[in-house]
Image (spheres, rainbow, N blue to C red):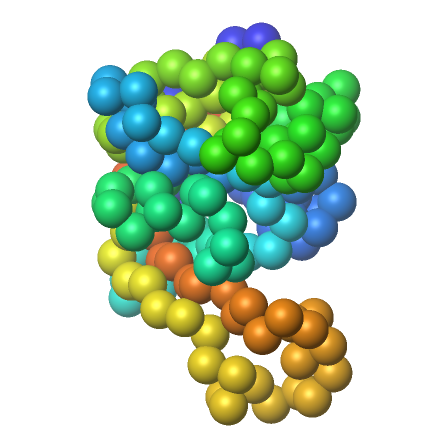
Length: 176
């Protein structure tokens, strides 16, 4: 699979299916230092914020990856074809605190072009981001009551906005 650089304003992304059906792999930390962790994410968004291309991710406070997001100012998002579903399932179902889940999933961390956080060699798309905003979801601000049922433990997500600073992918993700 040949990935090439894609300028953020040339990205063509099936946003809803990319998150909700295909899933993404979030990586945070520092590749060069060997300090990083990742997890599968199915909730998020892509667009423009403050005049910048951005990706918005949400991570529950209990997730090990959150520790890396709080300390390091970059993260990556990667998309894969359907043959990696089992790898993404593994990355989303076990903790990096107790498992070398990246190795167990058969995925390979590699240096990113711009971000300190690693990219994944097998991905068909990688989006590199620099955190520009973070906060915790305030349950008092949720306007749709049934959303609270998604948080029986009251573990409301932490939100991160990342400015897209680089991207690479196969041709299907490039505007023609």
